Picture 1 (tube, rainbow, N blue to C red):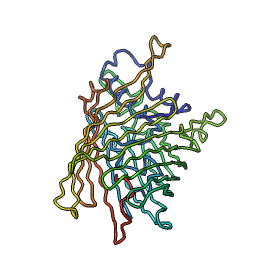
Picture 2 (cartoon, helix red, strand yellow; picture 1 turned 90 degrees about the vertical axis):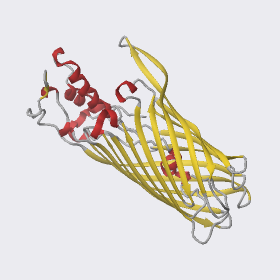
Picture 3 (cartoon, rainbow, N blue to C red; picture 1 turned 180 degrees about the horizontal axis):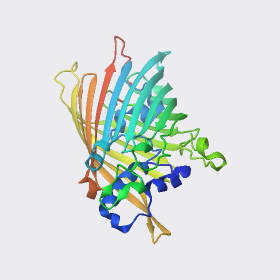
Picture 4 (cartoon, helix red, strand yellow; picture 1 turned 180 degrees about the vertical axis):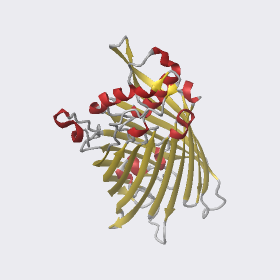
Length: 384
């Protein structure tokens, strides 16, 4: 996960936490503070899905319209940290639609729209985003059923972020017996909300060898305009310190490779680089063809993936030790029936947070529905 430190809100959050409370507060208070800080540490994060291959428009705008059919509907849901945060768990909802329009004999345009919403923690930190994306795919060589393509993509979004500080537990409310909710806390607390625009670009190369085998490689660069993630200017006057969202580079690759007559492997990997942080998610699925005839498309997949990220630890208050963190192992499954696909994944937490989460992290549900229509221009795109 990636974060941007909201500089101007630092002092405000310290007031919320009030680290100067008595040692009599005990572990109960510390736990409550930790649960409060957990969502705050993820402020200004980008959403991410373990099933990144089933959320293509969020991965790279150049994937808009890259499909074997004419139109595609996608829905995703992610639930994270429920064992720790209970009803305050992180929830992410995503829905997208994209379509391709043929240009000349082999090339095509793609366009689409995405709506997603993310809610995190007890302070109801919310982000709602509406995005429009477009792409142009140019055939470099080959025919409809065996070709190399280069795709260029662009998207623009309008986003709203908000947080409910009215739900916070303030330092003045902490007592030996737990938070005193009868104490009003800080009467000056407010619930900030702001809107910002965002722009991303992307490229993709893919090669379809035949109906059963393909490979692709792509990258996207998000937050070109580095939108601000605070609106402190409205309340702080000349003391405003901007907190822009770091640009993010995503590099991804994958493919489908036939094994035997019916089965195949579907490997994939994606790397994110944002500010001082990076993350890698990679692995493979094994696809088992269940079709009884060439007119019937059914398959079942089982996959194992791993997520790595960088980590930093402060030693003696000054020295910073950098390393690599194994964040989670991901178990995935998918069932495809003709033009519909259903995906399910479960993250097994392998970081030090597993002590609080009992190794449970998150689960995801994904759904894809393709509409081909009467015109199907051959197999010249990877399947997602």
